[in-house]
Image (cartoon, rainbow, N blue to C red):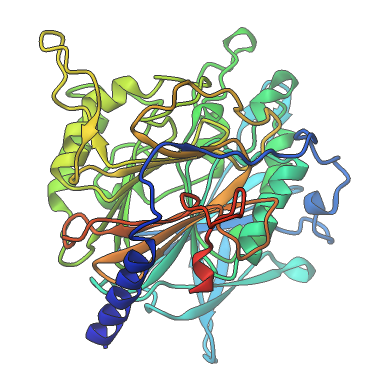
Length: 484
């Protein structure tokens, strides 16, 4: 079965190569697309997307994430507003007549003059792979029922599709981004979220009501498929002047992750395996220098990655290592200097980041030869290096990062100041396809895309397949791979 699929992929790739042999131009394109003049504005608090579910103490803000290292577990989280209610989750496989139950924990916090609802987290383990499960939370007349799919068993040629979203917020543009993702015909199965969630800290006194509205906003998707969390700068959420000096307080209470399953000592850096991917989450805003806990964990985790089992090695972080926008320019440089050599050594396939409110895709480059003496400070082409993709374009109220550094650096392959989402569609051990979807386009349209050749298994050069080719006589024409 794998051989047939692999051959089909190679045929498709080489058809693309043949078609693009003359017309493809590599690297360095700034999109000429001009977005409309409407600016990102918050949805009003009485919008249906923020609706409180009916019934006394009904569970709300339901969301799930992976609950173990290997994809056979899930963490189910929800909030009850009026009283603790029940920590119990009932769950059952589709077509099963037997219901199981698991007991969770409950937490709560205060922030200045705000007191949270009762926050529940329940970890369910030892589920069957590739199975649809239903689950129920709440008690009495206010129970609510949802469902999710567990991933296929871990294996090198297991196809799987991830969505990529970052810096979402809760504006009209945020709603477009989430709607666009939900309607994408490629059908993402799990969201890789690269940080900056609710933007509650952008409101007076870090209004934590905005954590509640955001939780209700994303429930329509996050209750049905796992969102893999990365902490961003807007999750730091400190206000020492008002006695709130503990970083990540609301985030840590609301969003639990399975960090201990991968040997991590903190929930801000951890890793999971899912289908054919090994995903490493790094923390841009926790200590990461040499000999820190994050450093020790990462350099011990990377050698454990078994590329014959999970060939795709994906890294998530918030602050990008390569960024050619003026916003947050060079903010990721310290982490790049610290860790880029390891990303290259272990042939990481792609690094996804947020923070910059725009989209950018890099060439495969590295800058690990530089030191203060030799002056070799220009990134060079490096086939062992990851592709760096910035996707902090979810739609938050701070708006787009429109000012770019000029001239466009050689390491930048494509950049555009628009809101959107990404799809990483893993085909087998050798090939995956990444596409970026601009909110203003049709659901199936990719404004930028490329085939990723696996760094461990691959030996064929990659071909960008959209946004870099212009047809004769068609100003601004872009090829869409869906036509082949």
